[in-house]
Length: 86
Image 1: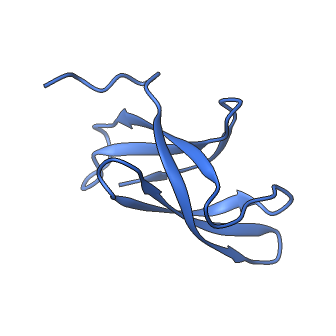
Image 2: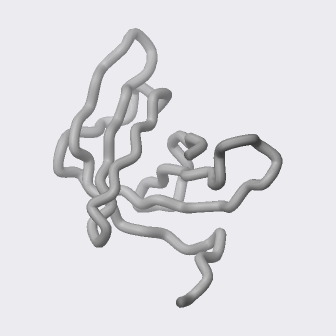
């Protein structure tokens, strides 16, 4: 099995968008594994709708108790939009 590198990106589709006051809550689904990740603090000014394509980046972490990786949501220009620990 190949090791996942920090520069690797995985295509995902937006499943749902929740508009809050200043942020959007965005759920995405990775296209190959169908795994879902929720990002709760995506900039509210960014235009995002269900079906849009974005990208996930994954970085292993070791210093946080029950979390094993940091997952970052990127746009097509490789700009980080939000991150979460899973």
